[in-house]
Length: 440
Image (cartoon, rainbow, N blue to C red; front, side):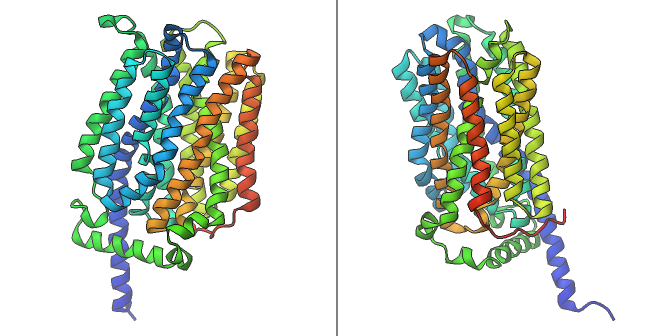
């Protein structure tokens, strides 16, 4: 007996949805990675600029650490409003606005003249960038069902680690332009890495659809099938349908994830903003050589992002896929604190960075498992914004401890302990719905 017409129709719809998802992966994820790469370059290039800027402007480790961290003050204040506006206005227009404004401000960092202007520009840059990352995480929920979200998120977040890989050699080469046309190398760095964000923000207006229903590169059947698949994915989680923004902000799970994320970001930026200077202390390197050396740990981070995300989706498991990388990363940072040679230091930092970045894909797949719509926009932005308080504290603490002890050892120990704490919090306190294992 042949298959029932209803079964045949269901298979046809599922096939159309799979075709739509395949097109979305190819069409959207590389472009979103490019946007995030530009975002992260503009955020962390200050770590390489410090190799010249601190000397030119007389910045102490404490002054630089505070300035690097001030970015997150503006970021935290503006994050939730920005993400709520994105949900209301649509991703295309709001992401374009974010990118163009941060590109202009990032390029304006070349006019930094002292500590006060450094603090103000970093503060404003954080306000301009607010909403981009949680907006993209929210945007991915418009396209990918729950069982595929960790993989899509991990692939998107690979741009984060790749930005560090590219940042090293690129920043090192640009710093080598020191003196060209009367500008310092660090001034060229801010200028040349701010312009691409303005250009990409303009492209977003013409390239990025607000959701599957607006994607002209999908056939009508593919659009309808994907919309139906995502609607069914949402309806299968009854809890998410009862969550409004107020419930999301009162959810224990939201606050558990927020506490874990504070510690993750504390370690992430404590390493990212200081790694070039830590490596520099191991010997006399040119800026280009230093850039290539700083890229090594982030190659490991990029690999960990993808591999852990794929494993998390295939097994439908998040908590242990977050906790185990956190413990590995903590071990790596503890070993880096005691390394006495460049090879040992880079090896330890490679383990530490792989642990940090390996956590991120599973982590950002957790909130959409119980949040949708306005609750997702507000809840994800809350986690990200408060979590980035750690982005202020990590670099600032590293600067203070470096200045007071003339060593990075105690700072790296604290970053490692924070990273382990992030995994312990999720293991002990977070209870989420078990994801369906991916068939991919």
